[in-house]
Image (cartoon, rainbow, N blue to C red; front, side):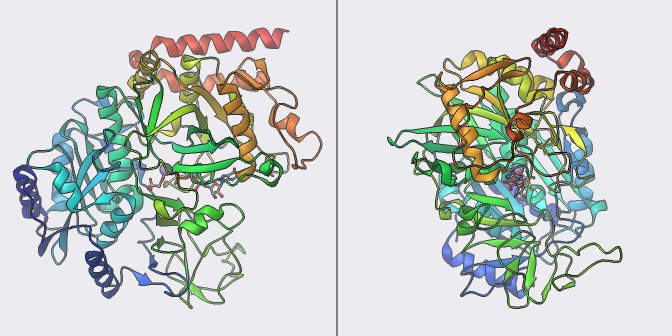
Length: 597
Ligand code: GTP
Ligand code: SPV
Ligand code: MN
């Protein structure tokens, strides 16, 4: 039994239970015994299928409704008092309308089910970085995922005490109909209401809803940063570790970079990579004047397709046990498989769409039938990753030497460049664009502007957000340098020019050298690029001319890109800091001078 001492929390739970009318209310204590009970219940109801327990100890399979396999950004709202506070890149609803609309869906939505009370901590319990939330949910799948992705239960309630502050998170899968789906954020009430979905970012409310949308709002008020960033450490042969963060849009390589394996050619240098986080970073100015980062999560909710023992052996090792697989292929032998995964697919299985699947199946247009959804995922405890950093739960976080922005661009953006200073770095982050992926519903491949990889996740007006980034620069006495990378440039035939994955360490090596004031670079209008032969390519056999293409800056293309940037910036009107326009004008000027020369 969990004994809650917090009168405000108890009253809120009662109020929400009266609205949703569950059959019972269960307080989650976080124990192993409780986990077993929940797993058995989910299996009995058919929400989870145990995998072959010899091959996959403690692992389960789950399939979500086929209409519920990615974040639904068009149903995600910031319910701030005024639409200007949400800004032009967010959907807005007034708080009154938001509560009223959602309440009609929540009304009686938990009948026949239990309501679970999940107290969770984002960040190690008790760390100065950490924030507490309480999620009320009628989904056992959500409870079991929250147990992996966050720290839950009694220890969190103890920390909350009799009157601690927490984010009120209400979730019901209701009837899982898209017409009854809403993901609402009330930043001024520290409240999240999500209904009609059981998918990851829509339903695991600690992740994108709390740790990014609500936290970004709080971070602006409290002078810190809540970002869609991985955190990794690079250990040098002498044992010194330097940490970097990197913000890439969804399904653009954060998990992979966070767990990278040094390539053969660089092995002799004796680097070691340490994973601190793969999706979210909370950053604060430390007593030493540097920026320190903490991973608020406790697990990985990673993209399955494309993950295999070659591309990401650390992720494969992390998901060997105690993992939940969602929307991949379920083999008839109780195995799991996905496109570009390990080994041959099972002879017979059931696809993410709950249909019989056999290798080589084609649809009516002759296209291969996918076994796994492109956004199928694994939920694995972070502590199971072989490269997990000894500092990943350090309450103080880790000091950051460099920050990286990036996107998925077939053309234009070179492999890597360095910004001239903090403000220019903010401009570089603010102008990131990327091709859409399957992580959210919408047209895959279309280029959209995704500043700081935060377009779906910033909980307030992004004009103000850029202003906050600029202000932070003035508050960090020893700021990290800011870089931009693009692993996804393609040749004329549509093939990636850069091998990516482990080979990305060659780029990190240059980035860290530059951060120490070393490393050779050449100046271009967009920033500093690696000088000829400045990247160590030992053991990497690229076709002649590839590096030139990867490091090419076409001034006319960049000039054309300014049109898109201008249109994007203009949306923010007077909320756009003048400094961003100043950066825009100086880049335009540098490009003009370069073209003239
Ligand atoms: P979210 O969890 O949605 O935030 O995604 P993420 O940014 O963590 O992306 P992830 O690392 O899961 O990678 C997404 C896809 O990009 C996978 O299919 C990877 O195989 C692929 N990918 C990752 N790194 C690279 C790379 O360096 N080069 C290429 N070509 N593909 C990559
Ligand atoms: C993303 O889409 O960026 C993810 C997955 O990391 S989700 O938790 O659904 O947001
Ligand atoms: Mn993400």
